[in-house]
Length: 418
Image (cartoon, rainbow, N blue to C red; front, side, top):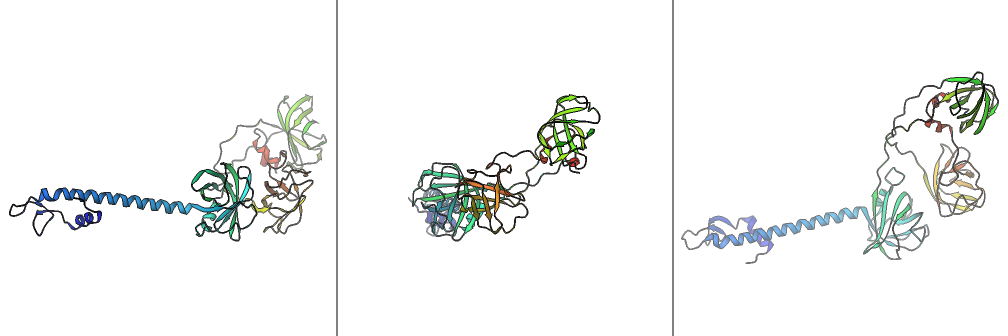
């Protein structure tokens, strides 16, 4: 016989099959009839086994369907379905659509303009907010892929997100993928969040103060290169030894480097690191050890306030402007932006309602043209006088006082700052 799943489940649950004698009032009994005319086991046991199999198959199929439904719901919570728009303007792409600030998605940094409504009319605001939740500089990895054609995709790192009416501006950096989207393509956007930065590591102990070997009254201008001074007494050091020459009036004014020649109390050294400035004639001369081994890495520090995204600059090639909330150049603010123009000479930048301020390279050099390129993303920090581009945008800068932290032996940073 063939039994349906509903009939099988009902009979099993209601005790249709049982161990009592079979009879007119107990058709599912397994025991022999009272009058011996029927063998209940032969009549009902095969049917009962079939019912158990049918019921088990039904339960298994139902459980699989339930799991598939759970997976679908979970996927929908981290994936957006949007239609590709071929425009590149910084504007609302339209409900359920996404576009980019550039036509080719396979290189460099650019911005995705993403509707706050998905292609099915649902609210995508909370999903998009998750793109900026991490405190790390890279917020996470985002994949855009054509539904039904997985060969058309692009992977990008999300670096920031800005709010606009009806859409969000998602700053990204290309990672991989051939792209190839065409207008109207249905895309799936899947995002994997980056973890937050860790806590600030502990401050190391203060090292011992340097031992002053001699003094000098030779007039020297602080700067790198070969320097010669006459000391009060012989240093007792040889060529190649490192010395620190620091002002007796202000230890923040100093020079450091190896001895290259000795003639009595006349010492010549090659200054490689400096602190402070000026021409001075009263020095303490100390022996300094060579650079020590690298110490163990401490735990990662917590994220600071970070840079604020200001979008694409307006204005002209050498007088660019950024709209935003900045009202005062206090606290050394940092900004991120995409250049709207390529500079042809020195560049002046006006951010928010602050005064127009000159832009310098990371080393503090005046821009001469071509350092800021249209369509490229930059980070700049106000140093108290100028906006300084980050190290990747300008020439490499010189050493500063903090770099002596890496020098071992007699050099002691807290001592020099007294």
